[in-house]
Image (cartoon, rainbow, N blue to C red; front, side):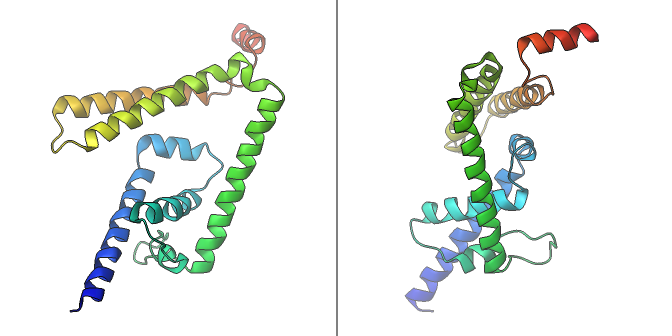
Amino acid sequence: MNEEQTESEAAHTSVRQLTSTVKQVIREPIMELLQSGSVLSKAQLETLLIDLVVEDSLGKHITYENKAAYRSRSDRRLRGVSRGAFNRTLKQARRNITRCLYTMLLLTYLGLFEMNIFRPFEEVSSRIGDYRRIREVLSGKDKLTPEDIESLRVTEDSIISALETLFSSLTLKTELARKRVEQEK
């Protein structure tokens, strides 16, 4: 085996490991809950992560054909999708994110982000940031203690609970409207 083949096989293994990590992240409880309420389908999220994370993590260009080969399919026996399907899904994901960002900018322009109804979102966002930092610290450990695992689980559960509360129908109502609904119960 020559050096070029060995290098190619190592790169292929690295890409496979990274895409496997992407698929694991997508199955995490917090990620599943966030994705279910987002404007991205699971396929769009996976495609976007493969497009952005794999190439940056490897530090070199990966062709779209190769990226498409690592995307999940609904038929578990088959791996990958066509390059065209990968590119279409990526385009849809980018369009959905762009629309979401425009919506956020519109709400900011209208001064709605300054209202109290958005404060809980800021708090949960901060908790998620803390959770990511904890995971980053724990990922550097060779072995996790039962306390580490419990701490992570408790933090995860509190975030999921906060997200479920946030996504209730009362969240995006004014304080006055919430009080009226509570009185009607």
